[in-house]
Image (cartoon, rainbow, N blue to C red; front, side, top):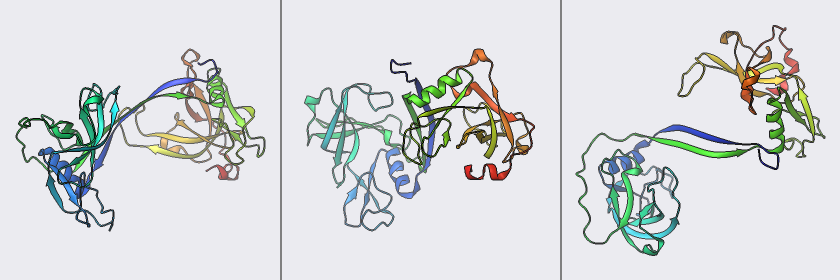
Amino acid sequence: MSELGTLHAPLKVEFDYTRSLGPTLSGFMTGLKRRQVLGGVLSDGSVAVPPPEDDPHTLDPVTELVPRSDEGALQSWAWVPEPVPGQPLDRPFAFAHVLLDGADRPLLHAVAVDSPDQIETGLRVRVRWAEETVGAITDIRWFEQADGEPESKPEATDGDEVTGIISPVNLAYDFAASPEESAFFRGLAEGRILGQRCPVCHKVYVPPRGACPVDGVPTTDEVELPDHGTVTTFCIVNVPFMGQKIEPPYVSAYVLLDGADIAFLHLILGVDAAEVRMGMRVKAVWKPRDEWGTTIENISHFEPTGEPDADYESYKVHL
């Protein structure tokens, strides 16, 4: 907790993003796998590297790919004094627009030089290829100054056509909660659910918001809500995925707590997934107190109360 009273927590998001390439980018990536740079011929006769999928002038698909040189000149550049994990080099380098010989549009990539004094607009550079190419932009490890004879590059093989790529996504950042959110999370650490009420429309938001999205005014009144409510909408999760903690099928649902005007997402357990329905009355199941922290995970899940279903009219505006 900071001196200002707001809560902070490190968050990390990791997943593999899989993309099918389509014919144009498939040709470009297949060329890289074969250690060849291909450009797309546009309707005005210019050549773009990398090729766009659609011509910017006619919006027609770009279908003609032509080989271009793996040498060129810098058009512009920016120095990176402190590289972060995942960047092309683990030492200071430059990101630059490289206009390859025979191309009319620059390619953005890394340039390996020892200091910013060694780089300038117009500097001649060439590709340093990866020892093993797979059909990705990282097959170009970086560009380096084109002085002297180029090193012999490994012999290229035809290999299979590249039709898709997998891009790992790794985001690590510090989440700073607002004062209202901080109060909400501290309340959870005490076994309480706190919301905020708009002074104009009197809607109660949980988790709280700093301003009412209806009236645009600060939510000034803190409201403690019960830990039971009504299922409004829900989804039955049947498909397993990486990192899944619960064996499917299970239900992820929006629960409208009694007295609240917006539902929030949580798990519904303790009942067969096929029996979960809109209007079902549910209550929070809290983890053991010694496991509580400033997190919504203090509530393990919601389960049915056994009460009759809520009348549709009572929650229809919250769907």
